[in-house]
Image (cartoon, rainbow, N blue to C red):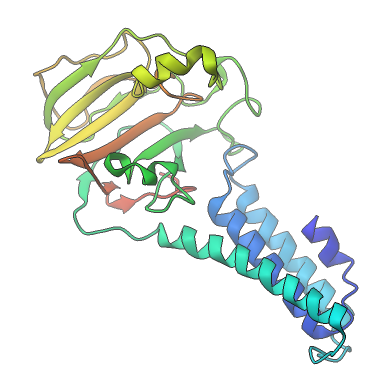
Length: 287
C-alpha cells in the first residue's frame, strides 16, 4: 500500500513529500528489523527495500520542481503535517526499540551451534521485546527460537501447514552446544498440531511449557533445550555430555505453536546472553 502511494505521489510540495517518504522509510525499516521473513521468504527482506528505493527515486522526480512549502498557515495542512510527524515517530519508536535488541550485556556464554545440517533462521532472538517476545521473561530474556529455511528461504511448505513434517526443522538432530552435565530430562510428552494454541491444550501447555526437554549444566550456567519429539532424547539425567554430542530431535511438544528449537541460558533464575559460534543472534539472523 505504501509503495503504491509513493509511486502515485501527489504531494503539494517537497516538504510534504519528504515527511511522507521519511515515514515510509521508517515503516520499511521496521519491517526489515521486526518482520518474520521466514514465513514469506527471507529473500524478500532485501528485495522489498530495493524496490521501494527505486520507487522513492522515481517519485522524487515528480516533485523536485515543487517548492518546499512547510510554512503554511492553513489549519488543515498543519493538522496533516502533525499526523505525518506522529506516524513517523511511531515507526521510529519501533525501529529504535528493535535496534536496542542488538546489544547485550557482557555476562554472555559461548556455545557451539546445536544444529548442523542446513540454513537456520532466528524467529525470536535479541534483547528487546520487539524482536524477542521471551525478553519479558527474566529467565528467558535472551532465549532463541530457531527454525530452518528451505532453498527459497521459507520455514515450511505453506503458510501454516497442519502436518508437522511440512516444517523444515522438524526431526532435525539437536547436538549439545557445550560440554557439561545433564541435570534434568523431561520426555514422553505428546506433541501438538501446529497452531493448536487453544483452550483444549491450555492446561497441557501451562503444565509442560518446555515439553520434552533437557537442561545442561555448563560453565556454571543452565542451558535449556526444549520442545523435542517424544522418545527422541538420547541422554539421561546425571550423564556427562560432550560438545557436539547428539541429544535429541526438534519437535513440537509443550507450549509451542510450531516445530522449532528453543534454547536459553540462565544463572540463578536470570537470563544470560548466548553467543552461538561467537555471534549474538537476533530475529532474522541466519547461521
